[in-house]
Image 1 (tube, rainbow, N blue to C red):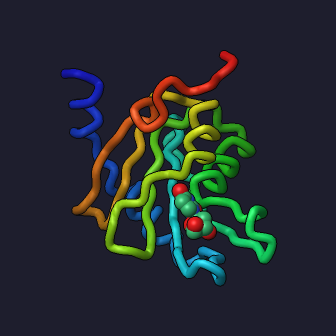
Image 2: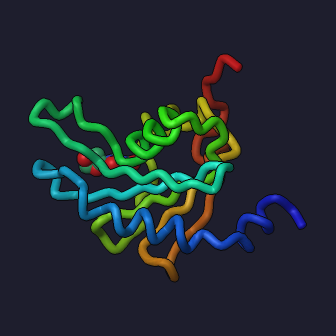
Length: 136
Ligand code: THU
């Protein structure tokens, strides 16, 4: 079984559910676009994040980076997968800044774009950010 087939067989329902549930904490008064993310660490723990906006727009933080920094700052070294959800009925791809941020830690990261527990698609970060800049 290839790695990709193995991923497709993996049960990401708890991770997707966490990402869907955390959207309610999104602070997004400027865009009204709620994003929820959940990261799965090799410890088995799940870390969630939402987008947190700011009146000074560039100070906004995306949900993916909030979830990642929560996990990393709790000592997690091996982040395996991230589920990303939004308040819209469509798949949301991580922005370029988040792709670069995440590739630092795991180019093999599994990225699950989810609308619901039933409707999702699975990608690899290395495919979303080919020829990426890293110093490792
Ligand atoms: N946003 C995320 O949280 N993640 C993404 O990958 C795309 C964009 C947020 C940032 C901002 O609060 C809102 O979505 C609109 O851009």
